[in-house]
Image (cartoon, rainbow, N blue to C red; front, side):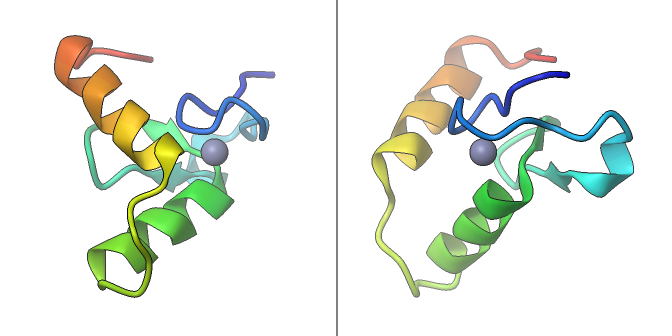
Length: 65
Ligand SMILES: [Zn+2]
């Protein structure tokens, strides 16, 4: 089982469709992270540490699994 590349805490489901597709790139993340991205995009939540680090990581490694 893979760990979420955004929070590095939650594990991803083996079936990709059960995870969330990140709004930041073509990467699957856990559902709590998907909810968090949605809240941040709606302006309901300030960007978290995980959000900032993940965005930076995607810019340097756009082809993360
Ligand atoms: Zn996550």
